[in-house]
Amino acid sequence: MSRRDEPPVVLSGRVVATTDKAVLVRVGNLEAWLPKSQVEALEDAVRDEEIEFECPAWLARDKGFDEG
Image (tube, rainbow, N blue to C red; front, side, top):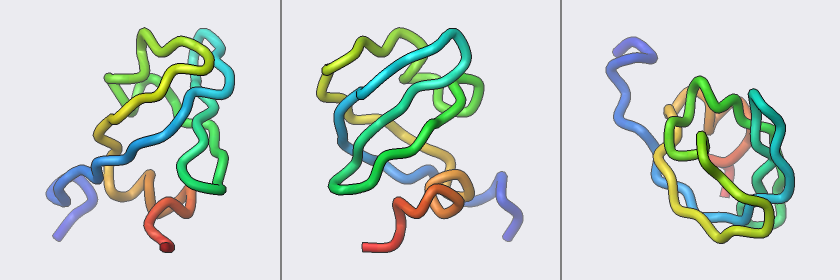
């Protein structure tokens, strides 16, 4: 199965910071920058917002969100 064939991972967290191109999210005890180009739901994210979003499985894995 290729990366593009994997179903997305649904994550819930808090927006910590934003830039024009990325959003820093906290999911549990882990924080990571996610590119807005890969996570459409983060395009209009606002700091301190609680958010649930779909993240490509490969990106969630790369950022450590699938480890617990």
